[in-house]
Length: 178
Image (cartoon, rainbow, N blue to C red; front, side):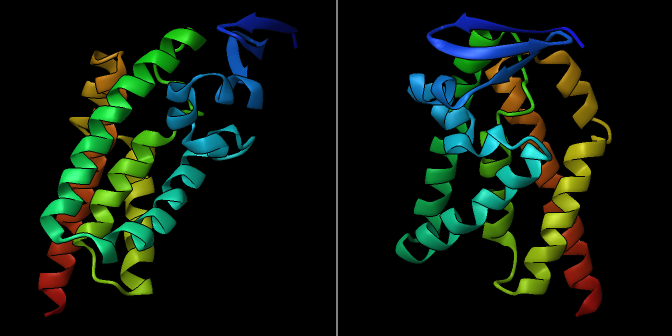
């Protein structure tokens, strides 16, 4: 494996097989990198998207009790547009539009899912599994938009669609059970 170290945008990254591997220094070099990488959660060597999704749980439990429902949704909308900016800046810095370490898209999308899910460990666990499956396998039209939109909006949009699928399935299950 060819592995080289390079400085890019003020942070040391490794380039192995044309895949950028950001470092802690890279993540803390710019606010956009910090946001896109979920404060460093995206540096996880295994399953950064899964850990990014899990990062939404403490954020949800911190924000949800303190905000009215509509205010919470406005926060999610603001987090979405913040992610569009952060992922665009970070993707350009890395030379990879949708780097696997950029996890803010999972955080925001799963916050939206959690908003609609009953506050039960079973429902939230099921939501987590469904969301990860939709995010990983990208059924139509998620895969279409993932391939079409190679910018910050595209990074955020495909996960928002996965969140929509998750909420639809959970709503159907909830209706079926009741």
